[in-house]
Image 1 (cartoon, rainbow, N blue to C red):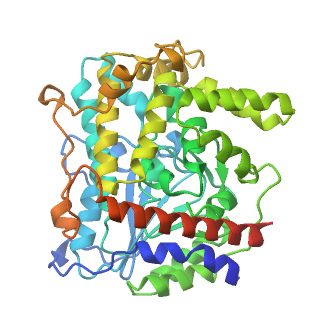
Image 2 (tube, one colour):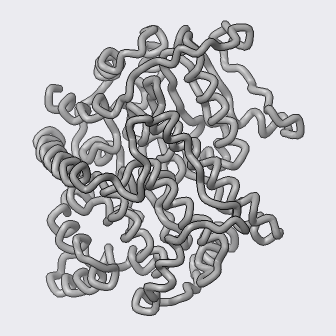
Amino acid sequence: MRGVQALRSLSLERFRGGVAAAAADFGKLSLNRTTVRLASSDSMTSPSVADEILTDEKFSTKIAILNRPSKLNALTLYHVTRLRELYTDWEKDPYVRLVIIKGNGRGFCAGGDVADVYRLGKAGKRAEGIEFFKEEYRLNYLIGTYKKPHVALLNGVVMGGGTGISVHGTFRVATEKTVFAMPETAIGLHPDVGASYYLSRLPGHLGEYLGLTATRLDGADMVACSLATHFVPSHRLEMLEERLGSLNTDDPAVISSAIDEYCDIVHLSEKSPLHRRQEIDTCFGRSSAEEIVRKIEAGLESGNPWYQETLDKLKKGSPLSLKVTLRSVREGRRQHLFQCLQREYRLSVHAVESKYSNDFSEGCRAVLVDKDNAPKWNPPTPEQVTSEIVDYQFSPVGEDLGGELELPVEEREPKIKQSSYAPFCIYIDALLLMRYRSEALWYASLEVLN
């Protein structure tokens, strides 16, 4: 278990400590321990929609429950807005010391409901679709800078937007049912919700690989590469939840130790993509999407099936998305979370705008609406995606599209100086430290998981 505990040490360093002392309206608190229905702040919200975000409480622990199982808890504008309201209130409440989030049904959260964004665009309501991304990223930033411990119970599918409400938090608990992926390139989008921040900090070039290929990871994989901090068998989650609810503490060390009590030793499966670390680093360390493809094509002669499988995955993605994703992840290595989210917002808005390419609309149609899985990408190949097209995706959002994403950085991270990039000296030190820690974590994980 010492080796397993070593895998989780990084989570404690990410905790930003300091419980908010602002007074809360105690009369609004429900003192029973049963799940309660939340009334929407919008009087026009139907009861059925309001039921899709539930809460529970156990003494000083608040629990947010995603309750849209028929859609694998996919997030809409209502969901992200309501979650941000709850999290803001709980952070201000001095009686709340720990926040847990989980999902009902087979999935934790399958991501944002981009099919809804697609339909809004087709109905001439593009601004509403853009508003979803804005509110979602604000929620991601709130969780990434949360002043209280946060535990995400990742029992089932956790993809896309589901990672944005979990990976940025203090603790991420995976199970044998966990399935992680960032499949955005297959619908003409890009890994967002702060993915360019956490993918860029994974060992070697694993982040580029996951972002470009949409390769899936299981719970053991997530622990091995630090996307998850703990592995708890699903049949113990209810007991874990009760244990956490009884702690009455905001000490991350105590919380981590409590989760440890329910952990299990996990092993990488034979098919784990993490066994292909050498091939991943060799291919996805190349400077461009075209070079990555050429390197993989050259590997086909070796007879190693990984090369063909990886090439097939790349071909499913939008060529524009591949180039945008590669650049986004690499820019993320020298940026803070808020900068990554602001950049990703630009990419998402321009994807919806479709000035140079309608790949987002076409990808949603082919994969999520018509489900023929035969998108017609434009441009059709990476070679035809010009630097002008890529540069535009990273350009500032004009006022006609709602303007840039504003985040309360000075309020939540007063020690961070806002700039286009983190200072160069900090970037070098942080990158070296990240690499040393990642490599140490990687080799420690192999000792424990194999």
